[in-house]
Picture: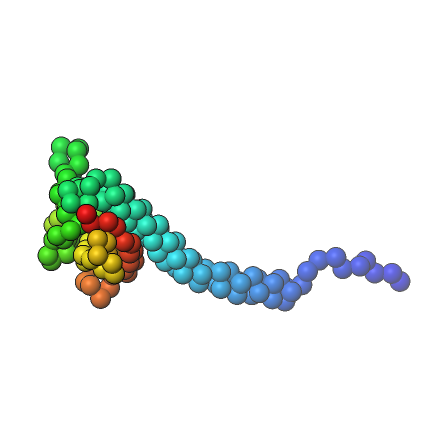
Length: 159
């Protein structure tokens, strides 16, 4: 007597398959917070580079003894602050930026996402050159110990 072949899955096989799939899904779900943190940090680093390039460009456009730096906005127009690379401000200039990389002033506001310290040292390493360091920190409203800092350095003529 011939019996029909069994083409279905048993309940045990289905339960084991679901167990393997659920184990894999739990592992994949554990990667989401790590990926989100990495994406946010990458976005912050990209914005930090943009801000530093913007500041370096502002400093390079004018004469070294009388150049201007955008430090905020008023009535949808930039507010320019004079900078003299031969006689840098003491203490370092502090500028706050929003999440789009636009300067919003020299004091923290609810929109502050980035805090920039501009440090200028004159006649170093060669007379006539200023050492310009830009520290871009985020998030701006966090305590100093909890901020990530990106540092950018260049030499610029100061005369």
